[in-house]
Image 1 (tube, rainbow, N blue to C red):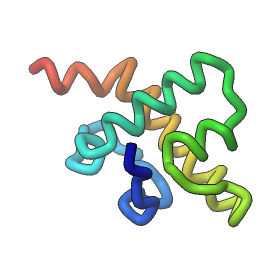
Image 2: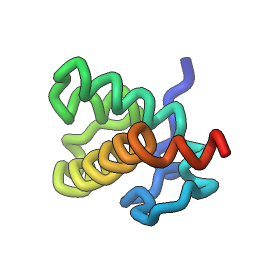
Image 3: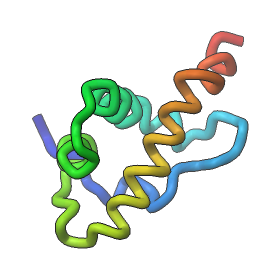
Length: 86
């Protein structure tokens, strides 16, 4: 499996109440983050797997990126998905 290019991911995930093109491109990422969160994996291990990069290079930036994308994934799973079924 090819590792994702971390430059394809924004530093912070979208925060609005509308699904964006970026969200659509990140469905697999969001699913990976939700799965890791549900399994109780540490954030840095989940980051390494989902983003395909080493969070040790810049822990603060990576933690922010992880947190905003997980928050967006949670929103997609509870509210955002409704826009897809319309």
